[in-house]
Each structure stands twice: as structure tokens, then as C-alpha cells.
Image 1 (cartoon, helix red, strand yellow):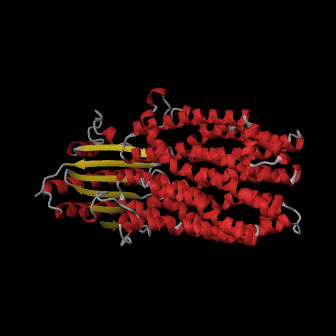
Image 2 (image 1 turned 180 degrees about the vertical axis):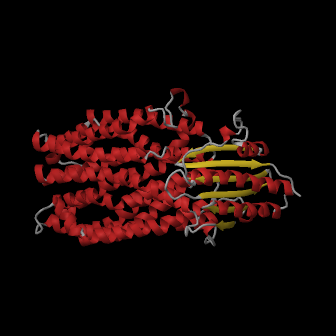
Image 3 (image 1 turned 90 degrees about the horizontal axis):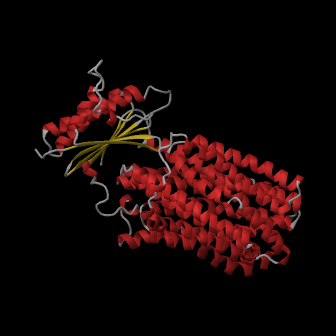
Length: 599
């Protein structure tokens, strides 16, 4: 690939970097939100009900894990399919996937709500509750059931709001949910004395509030994603499940792991060990939000770039994750290690108690796993976006169950509850090797370059020599890259007319963005230009992060009062074989194709 970087940016793709860190905070908050609510529940349970109630919530984590698994099928499969359709410019199919995801969320949510509400005793037995905890867990199950449907639908809405670049509404929803959870816990538990049932009702109420904050946007008339019964893409249901199932498999395995480890912990650590492990599950979600949120963004963007067959953006995306995101994760690791005692004291006030001591030890040991948790999230989400589902299934089984449970079974008899704690860093290290082994098997040798490590299939994208990447920051850059493009096309053996038209199209369209888009606000902007020489023609793809502007709809507009207005855009519309536009993820994407003949 030939690359030209104009301006002062140090990043190979500054627009992608800004987009990545624009999408990341919302995903961090969405994931961390549930754990913030769980932490609040744990504090209220431990201080105002009983320490044993913290264990009840911990036991119910297995059910929450299965519910999350089912939800992740719809959300994960929907994200990948919609991303691919965005990459190929098929907006109506993207809307069909949106309608499908909402429909499945409602149907599945109603079924799960019925199970949790009408069969709480079976749920308690499934979670492994003894007679002392059974009644409390049954009450928690009934209360939790009332908020499953809005939780399912809201998670789908929140995911698609990212495509609509409506991050503020997501922030509002997260904030409203956290605040309402605190207030509802205080109301139902400390004032109305509803105990564990009150905790569950508070959670369900928060899910409804989150849903009610997000849903109005889709009735505002501004949304590109529109629900329609006639447009539900039922034909993609099985493919959606197939794509989303690896993520669900991980959640199911995690739920089974919780059930297994809870029993091991009870046998070697008693109720103190169980409460300690439950507090761990509540607090560490805040610290691994970087990994899970980052993995979600990687899956979202990689799906788009796979649809575009954009090798360069995929490489830059993974580089960002392994450098900038990893630095954030290591900072979180150090912070948790230093605050391990303070974190344990949130749940257990007596610093001389057994439960406080083993909880502090657990936090300290867990920090060793954090960088590898991020690495595995990068690996599995990229594999899912790129269609390597077998590898994702293997990684899910290893990460979710085998790699942690086996060490725990071996170490628990030797080290007691500390053996269970050490199983987590050992297991995630083993899981991180799955990608390495799979890459060697898939390429049939040890990968020799980045393309092979990223598992690019033969024919994916175009050869390096046939594509040109340019980053533009100013009008001077436009003029410079116009000359570069003309030479690039000519050097590929195309006639002078084709080379001139290619350069003219870029200069006109890119110049229009710089002249009008860059100055609309005070934000920093970049333009990413790709020129691809293909057998059927020269393709130019121009991406910018300015305000939405569709030049295609102006190619046929003629102003009688000013015939020269939009003349440049109309000219390019005439010389182009095809010209298409879409705006997704806050980016304007203009694709121009020009027929050419070899010179």
C-alpha cells in the first residue's frame, strides 16, 4: 500500500482514533453501569440486610449470566450484521436487522421473565441455594423478572444509538439508571423494608427508566434506524444467531463456571468464601469495563471494515487496542492493586474478619489477570467480526470454563480458597494462547507477517500496490493529494483521461469538505481518502467526521437563480460511473467509481 500523510497528525488514521475513543466511553459506561448497580445492591445488602444476602446476589449471578448470554446473541449478531451492511452501503438491510433485533429482544425477554417469575423455586435449586438461602433467592428471582424485557430492548436500542452517534442519550440513560438505582434501593430496602425482594424491584425499576430514556429518540423522526414490522429481516435470524452464538457460549460457560466455583468455594471457604467471591464479581466489573467495552467497539468497527475489506483500518484498529487501550488497562490494574484493601472494606467493615482478609487477597491476585483479559477480548471480538467462529467457540469454552475450573479443582485442595483465586490469572493466560494456536493451524505455519496474524483470507481487499491511502487536513493537502492520485492512477497503466478524472473528483469533493465541513465548528477534523485501482475501475472512498452532508442528492439539483451553484458536484456526478453516500457512526462516507481503460 502507498500511503501519504499530510498535516501534523502523528496517527496513521487520526479519524479512526477519534472515532474509537468517541465510541469507547459509552460502551464503558453501559458495561460498568450494571456493576455499579450491583455494587450498590451489595453495599445495601451487606450493611442493611445481612452479609449472607451478598451471597444470595452472588448465587443469582449464574442466572444473570445466562440471561446476558441470550441477550448477547441478539446484540452481538446484530452488531456484526449491521456493521457489514454499513460497510457495503446497504442502509435498508441495516434497518431490517434493527427491526429483527428489537423483535427478538421482546419475544425472548417475555419468555425469560415468565421463567424467573413463575418458577423461582427451580431457579433457586439451579443456583445451588441451600435451605437457608432458598427463600431469599426465590424472592430476588421474582423481583428481577419484572425488568428483563426493558433490559433486553434497551440494550439493543443503546447499541444502535452508537450507529446514530447519539452518545449523549446513552449517557443520560446510564446516569438516570445509576441514580435511580441508589434511590430505589434506599426506598425499597431501608424505608419500606422489603429486604432482598426490594433490591430486585429496584433493579427492575432502573431497567424501565433506562428504556424510557432511550426509546423516545426512535419516535423523534430523526433516527435512521426505524422499526417496521414489514421490514423485519427474519431471513437473517439463523445467521444472526450463528454470528452471535460465540459470545453467548462464553456467557453460558461463565454461568456454569460460577455454579462450579461457588460449590468449590463453599467446600473450602464456607459462606465467608462465597460472600468474598460475590463481592469480587461486583467490584471487578468496573475495572474490566475497559476490556469488555473496548472489545465491543473493536467488534463494531471491525465488522464495518470487514464489509469494506479495508485492511489498513483493521490493522490500525488492532494497533490502537494493543497500545492505548492496553495502557489504560495496566493503569487500572495498578489502581486496583493499591486499593484492594479499600475495595474489600466497602462490603466488609471488620478488617480483622476472615471474609475481609480473603477478599483483599482475591483483589490483589485478580490484578495479574487484567492485561490478559483485555488481550482475550481483543482476540475474540476481532475473530467474531471477521467470521472465525470456530476459534471464538474454542476461546469461549476455554475462557468461560475449562481454563479456570481445571486449575481451581487442582489448586483448591492444596491451597484452599486461595487456589480458586489463583485459577483466574492462570486460566486467562492459557486462554490467550488459543488465538496463537489457531493462527498457526489456520495458516498452516507460524504466521510471518501482520496480515497472516490477522487471518486475512486470500482475495480479501486489494493488493498493497493497488491502493493509496491519504490523510487530509487542509486545502493545501487537497491540491497535493490530487497530483499524487493522478500519478498513482497513471502509473497503474490507465489512460490520462481516467487519471485526470480521478484527481478531479477527489479535488472537487475533498475541497468541498475542507471549505465547508472543516469550518462549521471548532472541532479538529480529518479526511481519510482511499484510492483503489480495480479491474472494473478506479474507486475513490472519502470519509470525514464533519456534519452530515450528502453530495449525491445535489448532483441533479439546479438553482435557476444561480446556475453555477453545485456545479462542481454536478460535474463529478456526470463523469462518475457510480456515486453513493451514507452517514453512519458519525462519518460521511462518499464512494465514487470511475470506469477506466488500460492505456
